[in-house]
Length: 316
Image (tube, rainbow, N blue to C red):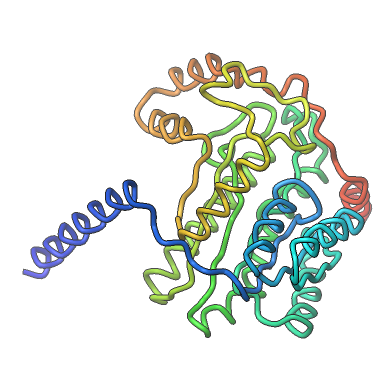
């Protein structure tokens, strides 16, 4: 009887949530108010992080900006303050350093307060074939792209759970759902980031019954210095994404408390195909889309501070 009752409850919930999702596809969810929320963005010194800071500043949020590049971070701080009467706090933080993350997190709690929206955006990319990637750069990819998410969440999630209010945002990648040529370290670290964020979402929802929200973002390559030189064979199907377009999509997803966001929409179809077609067909699809040559002219910029940090770790 328990099995029958559980099955009936499951199908009832399944139908309800299915209809709810259909309705929200037609009628957008009401956007939440983020004014007064304390929003921490890692990798805020440039690119997507900077643009997200501008959006939150325009909506009255209190900004906490983290980046290893102090000059870029201060420029983001200056631009955010131009949006009006906005409180902005900028901190230099190497997210690959666990002790530094915890130290700066304690400083934020003391000087600003409890973070209520945490956006794990900091990322690095090597862009080399697997056998050409130095070991310290593999470690750097995982430290920044994945492990730093564990440390920031450990630092700020307890206060969110206690208040039963907060939002965790993970900026992963399409490369965190589908393995990508010449991105073995980046892709695997983004798989790890996606898996962590999804597991934490399930844990918060099922075990703790928490109202802390999660948003997991998986964009294709964005036109930033990070992916300079990357190419796409068919831009209509799989375009290199404009920074502002992605920032607006991510911001809207956070306001609507959307759990998953894949950009562009073709990514949903490609991910579905991955589950049903053979590996050889997946390779053929990748060749058709130009995934075998997309990194051929890669010139992605690696910040001097990050290279120095990697060199220091290698020498230790």
